[in-house]
Image 1 (cartoon, rainbow, N blue to C red):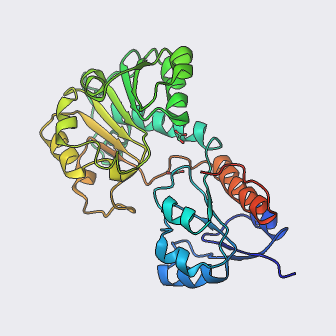
Image 2 (cartoon, protein in one colour):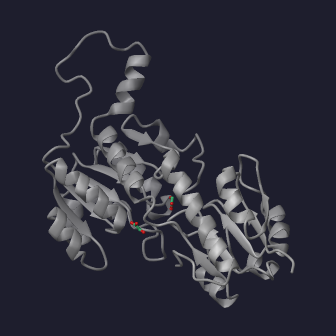
Length: 319
Ligand code: GLV
Ligand code: GLV
C-alpha cells in the first residue's frame, strides 16, 4: 500500500520529522519564510495531511485542490487562518496546539505587561543612545505593577495562567469572558465584569481573546476612550482585534498611557506603521509561545495529531 503523504509548511526538527516519517512520506518547505501560496496549492494536491503555521490560509480554494487531505494540524493555539466550515464540508479534521503553550504565552504576556508599565525597552534605548547623563528623580518613571488592577479580556487557559502570575503580584483581577470561569475565580480571586466596567477600572487591560467575527476590531475609539489615562493596553491575541488607528490616536492624545503589542493587523508589521514610532509602545514580533521547549512541544503535538489521524485514530486536540 502507498504510504500517506504529509506536507510540512516550515522546517521542523529531525525529531518531529521522524515522528511523521514513521507513518508517512514527508515533504517540507525548508525556507525561513512562508511558502508561496501557488506552490502550497500544488503541494497539497498529493497530501493526506498538512502541518501548517498561522501564516498559511486554509480555505475553500485550497481544500478544493487537496482532494486527499484528511487533517490540517495547525502549529498554534489560534486558528483564525483556517476556514473551519470549509474544512468540515470537505471532511477534513483540524487540530491546534492548546495547553502545551499556555505557560510560555502567559509568561510573555506578563513580560510585556511589565516591560510596558516600567518602560523597559524605552529605557534600554535611552541608555544605548547615550542619553543617561545623571540619575534623576522622575527619570523614566513608569506605572506600578504590584497591587494594581488587571483586566483580562478573553479568559481561556492562557488568561487563567496570567491571573495566577498576577495574584503573585498582589493584583486585583477582573475578567471579561462569554462564560463565567468559576475555577479561575476560586483560584485567583478573579471577578467577572462587563467590558465597559473592566475598561474603566483596569490599570492594565490585557487582550487574550481569539480572533472571531465577534472580536474583530473589539478595541476601538470608544473602548480606548473608556480606559484610564494612566492605563496600559496589552495585546497578545491577534492584531485583527484592535483598530490600530484608534489605538494610535488614544496614545497620542494621551487617553491611555502606553501599549504593549505582540500582534499586529499586518504581520510582519511594516516599519512605517506609526505605532512603532511612539516611545510608549513596546512592540514584539508575535513571540507569545516562542521558547525552545514550547515550540518543540507544539511541533510534536501537531505531528502526533497527524500520525493518529493517518492511523485512523482520534487526534489529541481536535477543534
Ligand atoms: C500563536 O499566536 C498561536 O496562536 O499559537
Ligand atoms: C485559548 O485556547 C487559551 O488557551 O487561552
